[in-house]
Image (cartoon, rainbow, N blue to C red; front, side, top):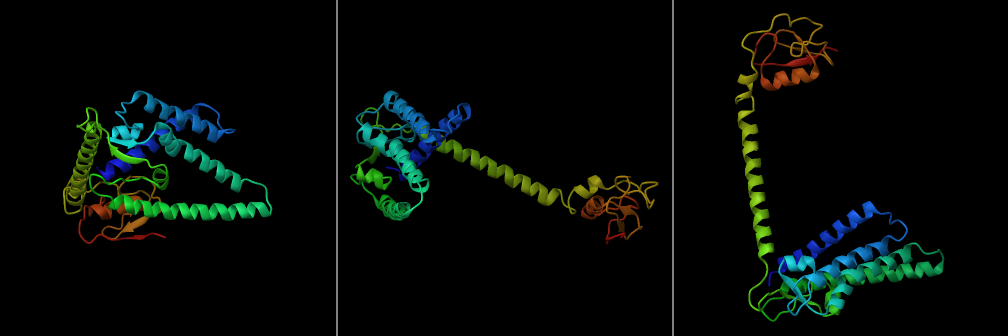
Length: 271
């Protein structure tokens, strides 16, 4: 079966647990027993999935059901791997790092470090075996914990033959369609900005004044905004003063607001 669907099932579960926990944490104060409250919320989500989703002889979570993936195991084993294991690891981490000082803490730190290193090594090895698993009878395990509890993925079926993955496939195609449209609009906007809105396109003609402005050659007035020049710059063609921001626009558009010159425009700071 699709390895992408199996990996997506874990990502969907993490997103669902995180969303429920974020909403619960924003509504209630959970500073004192944060890990315990999180365990309760995740357990309720898992219980609802195990209770109301069709199982058809297998176990599944919300994320796996949406992606058309099931697990050949008991519900309690799947609960231990997907929910309880994370809580236990957090409690162990807090015990090691928040414990009292002394020689015992140093020993626990070393044990924790080696256990963490060992698990990550097993995780890399398991992932390589997961990618290499092929064939109808091949069993793929999503993590070392799944392998320890012998929880392997299978295709979720409704009547014994047809896979229930319409939601997953439709979601994938909808996401690809949305990305294609975004790329198309981005390409069109880039083409528009690179060609039509450059000094060689339409922008100079749209911004170019029909005739030079009157009364804009005063040394105390910006030729573009008609205000006192901020960080003044003097343009070389008619020696009119500009604000720094305004002279940048004039040079970019290749047009002087004071005299209408459009070639060889340069500017220098007044002081």
